[in-house]
Length: 218
Image (cartoon, rainbow, N blue to C red; front, top):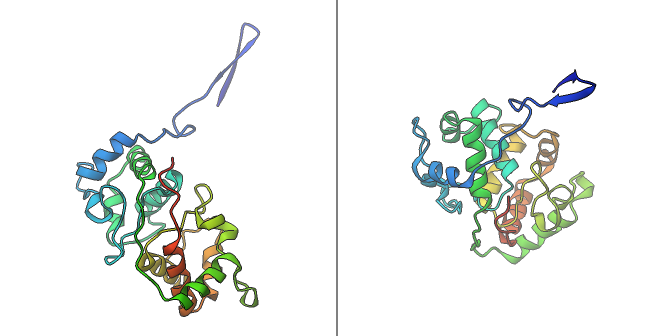
């Protein structure tokens, strides 16, 4: 910000470069999702689908309806090496800041109705308890404490987990647990996942996958 005095009045000039973040354009994002960005990156739909539904069997997450700020932050982390993945890193490397915002805006607006596979009742009951009540004997806080009621997400920091594919949820919890994912700004997931047993990871993932999604949102 630059402040100058002229004729007794203050003129405030806000330099947009680096101070204001351009909003994402969903229409431009759709082009990148469908066709790629023209510099060697693959179209996003190849793994996540044009509607952001993802693929449970292949371990590709649902992106539809997730907060745009969260999606953009993850793409920047892939691009800059704070989060690693052999598929995402080279594709994110080709995206500019504006393209990242555009892709995030597009997927945030999509609305996918999840069709989760059936899970054993006892596993779901264990997962529900962990999500809603935690396991205080082992210093595990409820997932809803950070991710909100129904694990629908809170802003750009705590993503919606409801209706996410169970295979992806397990994969990420295991990555937090073994330290191969560390891009948590508050370092909360590292500590929580370290205390989860393999059975608890499976139970939480199963239960969260059954919860209704919140639908498309900016």
